[in-house]
Image (cartoon, rainbow, N blue to C red; front, side, top):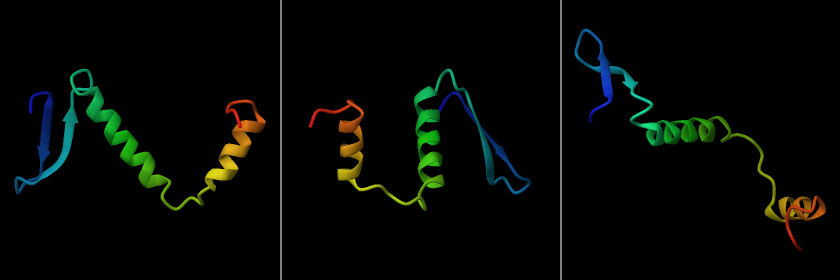
Length: 63
């Protein structure tokens, strides 16, 4: 894949990647989404009904 370079250790194992962000903006956005998702996986969820009620109350959603 062009626009991506891998950094390897002394045994030839890939340890890091350098990504051309101009060429692979969508790929970088996907990586960011995964990182954010992983960082939030232990957060307590909010029930959908509660979210909807809050949006309706603030005028962001019609009830």
